[in-house]
Structures are given as C-alpha cells and as structure tokens.
Length: 84
Image (tube, rainbow, N blue to C red; front, side, top):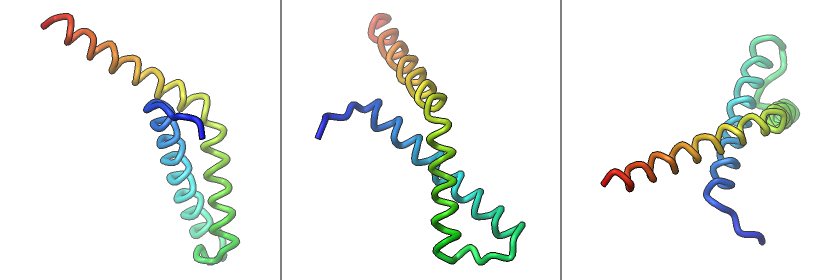
C-alpha cells in the first residue's frame, strides 16, 4: 500500500462528499418524478452509480480546489510564523 498524504486524504473525502450528495439528490429526483420505490436495490445501485459518476466528472475541479485550499493554509501558517 502506498503512503497517502493529508492532501490525498482530503481529496478522497471531498470526492466522497460529492458522491454522497449527488446520490441523495438523484434518489430524491427518482422519488419525485417516477413511480419507482427509492428503497429498492436497483434504484439504490443506480443512484449510487450516478453519484460516483458525478464525483468522477468533478474530480479535476475538486482536486484543484483542495490543492488551492491546502496551499493557502500553508501560506497563512508560514506568515504567522514569520510575523512572530
């Protein structure tokens, strides 16, 4: 197993958050706009796949966001150290 940095863990966490939110949204839309029961396994699997697809499509954007936030946090920490 390769070592993961804190940034990699943050990127994966953001991916999971996006996937979970997209899954929940897809499930709500299926419930509102179709006669399918949202508690059935095919609907659950389908909405999970949709959520993962959304997260995968947004990966370049979310990774860049995490990198930017980490970079800004490091700069802020460095500024605090230099001003002491």
